Length: 392
Ligand SMILES: [Zn+2]
Image (cartoon, rainbow, N blue to C red; front, side, top):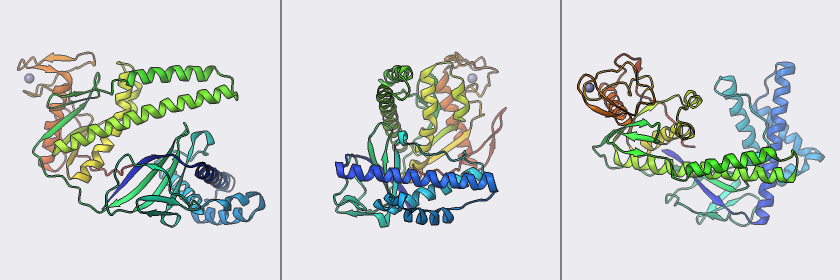
């Protein structure tokens, strides 16, 4: 069974907004109090405080007069918040994550409702302590005969409300098999290039949005700290950031869905995105592409699983740009400014990115055929990425 999350914008009534804001406030307070307690126990007494202890602390807090307001909201999101804190600590102790941070009001917030705290009736979502359903804008259809298992209400830093419905999707969504296979190369001047010669770019108004963002950030920095104008400028920055994130997400979803529909096998390079962002000889466009590459691969990974396609990730040290896809000649150097080149051995003329994507496809298919680790020429191992990723 695959689990999917469907995210929608919603516009709460003033009564709902009031309740939800109080709920988010309580989630934040409980989370931060528990985090403070756990931190203190660890640093002062070298004691580990776990989820169940924080959960009984919560019961005590609710009995205190000054924290009586905790009883006015559903208890489930408060408990869920403590569970998330537990996960953050587990990740921290396993070396997978940073030490948990305090939640801040200006970042918005979220509240997770499990089955006991919401109802799904006639296609409407009702949350605990609220009579009316959430006024959701259903921008895409939920699969039929499905019930959400968890819903998360989220307020973003620019003041927009979202609800995310997690669904165990029992339907078989596998697509009819197709023959086509494709290799994808992360572009330098474009977002990516495919082995059948298509160059895909970022949405056209992306650069304008980034310019707007930089202006808004400058204006924010000029405002006096603590002033009303600074708060206004902060919301403006957050709005543009949200717009960029939305545009990018939509664009990436469209691209990955199309790639998955049209191809049985897709080969990508598993790039270490973090390292790449530091060097960006082609400026901003490059940074955008880099930042998005991880998300693109993440979406391809889970969509391939949903729809019965194969995604092969090859080692990023594979010399995809330096190798001639026609004869296998490997150039010694291939600086980033070289966009086209001629192979000295077979005289083939190459577009840098297209040549790379053809090599990526070939390397991926070799891996797929052997079903095991293959040595790449002059390089480290090429291995199929078997890491499973959950959709966010
Ligand atoms: Zn050649």
